Length: 97
Ligand SMILES: [Zn+2]
Image (cartoon, rainbow, N blue to C red; front, top):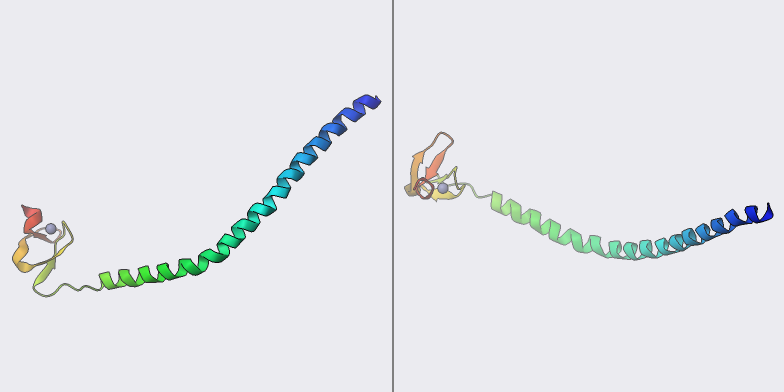
């Protein structure tokens, strides 16, 4: 009976050692990730703000009275490039060709 009782105890000790080894590694990984996160936010904010400004500049391009936006290629073209007004909107000569 004594030997039977001892066997499972030894295996439990082995499991505890491996779990403790895994636990010991995790704090190290979390520490390295934390240090990287501290660097990222500052460098991440600047390009994000720049991109939003660029998109606003592109959107603010009102077509002039003598221009139209082709509903096929979505380019703003001069009225001289207008081929015809389709059901969905104007179509330029390049797309009608
Ligand atoms: Zn077009």
